[in-house]
Length: 427
Ligand code: PMP
Figure (cartoon, protein in one colour):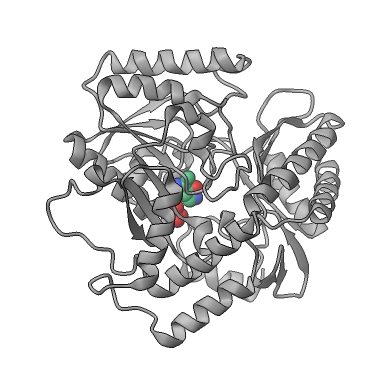
């Protein structure tokens, strides 16, 4: 055990999740690579947890942050803040939500918490619909609506939550259904639930479940849900913390894969927009955003330094069409990984969109989830010089691949080859 790991264990909570038996200390990064304290270089296929959206140490972001920090780091939202207004305008325009207002927070958790507060206040109901297997953050209310109970450390919640099917397709009651059958079954489940309760405030859902293992519903699921929600006046909150900013390639936001549903009433964002700086936020129609009847601020939400990072990062993303890159390079990577999976017994499915790719592992010769296999592949990939993530339902049996969106074709091929070796070693 390294000295740093021993000190970490002595002073930080036991429940603070860490990857690897011998956890890595990352000291610096550049482009799609990071280096550890021993000088070992890794190709980064996880980008923190999708926090490095464009590239590590992107000069444009570093310059914007240091210039802003040299002027002033923070003043609070009690004063006018030009970088905050600039970024809010860009996000409002990109959101697709009409008459959009933007509120900045410092994390995805706080963004979802705010969206829940707005929805419950607007609709005067503390009931929320959430998806089974979902993850929405670590505050008291976000934990309370998180369907993935291995990430929900308390069952007490200020909200009353009801869970809907729509994430996991590989096992459980909806396994093996066609896209249309799956959507019909999920809609039936939702209707059945709503037939027995007073209409809840909102449905919150990740278009592709992140922590849940990049489970990817068929296009149009939320359009079908929306019809039912509209009949009852229930709001739709799209948690875009992982799926936003073009990561899914075909779309800028995950909700757009369900375009017939139109824009959600609210969307929440975080992670990638700051390229590692802590930015989160909510976009909502003005009518919903302004339904609160007392003051509310986030002291550090919208801090000029983080806003400068967000603006530089977003500008780079749009100018270099990284969404298009995610579609092209992600498409090639998915194809390559499917070809590899076809030769191996222990891979159940390669799923996802763009540069958000899940590889579901099973015990060879069976259909049983393989969480131990997922941990072994993570360790073997690290040996190869490749960082990946893992996720999944209560059994963490999916590998998660989400590199910075500037990934090159050569790096995608190199990473796929490393992952193939890791999969073979760990079998
Ligand atoms: N929503 C989703 C979909 C997430 O993946 C996460 C983080 N993994 C959160 C919310 C919470 O974000 P944060 O960790 O920034 O609070």
